[in-house]
Image (cartoon, rainbow, N blue to C red):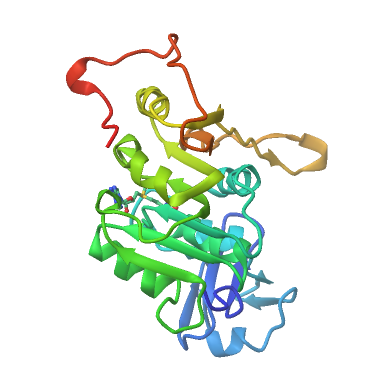
Length: 277
Ligand SMILES: C[S@@+](CC[C@H](N)C(=O)[O-])C[C@H]1O[C@@H](n2cnc3c(N)ncnc32)[C@H](O)[C@@H]1O
């Protein structure tokens, strides 16, 4: 992915203002109290501060959380950091792993995955919308050779080139339609993760998963409540991101090792049934 964070800094007034700035661009940066040129910002080391018209700003190195929430241009819904952190843990995403995802979307999870697998790992990301493929290429700096990401402009229904993947994450509208393709691309015991925004999609996905030699390990939703960090008046912030999506985690079993159909799984109307491929 190149060193996406190295050229970026965060400028904040420690109140409402926060901005991620790419210092490789030479430009005027707007602030609540005026402007500063990026050439001036470059001279201030991270951890330092400066004033513009009597207002103090602090300059920090940009971390992945900053980049996802404040630095990445969103052209789709993204996977939020609160979910991405748990996804990394549940799917055992670590240096050297070979993993897949669809769709690339705005590239938020792509950036997180790419960083976690390191230089020795490979991330194969599939996206059927050419506009979003080009967006990912420019925002994640793909195409300069220095990347562990391979981007495929393709609908997942048309197949996955790779085999024996350690993990695959699905963030598409109808994940049950691509289950066979993903199942075939995973290695036995490999991790599958899925994010869907509505409960009916969860039910439908569970019904689809039930058609394969796949062990569902968890269906979950993550709430994150942050606090106003004023020592004498410690209380939650008024607002929170109340809903992002439901997460489904599963593991691939060897073909034939599973399973009697679970009778408690709700069955959809016939014309509503997931496509087993
Ligand atoms: C919600 S966005 C993904 C956001 C992404 N995970 C992120 O964190 O930025 C869903 C993406 O999946 C793509 N998509 C939907 N169905 C697809 C399919 N069958 N094959 C490939 N891409 C698909 C859409 O074009 C869209 O960009």
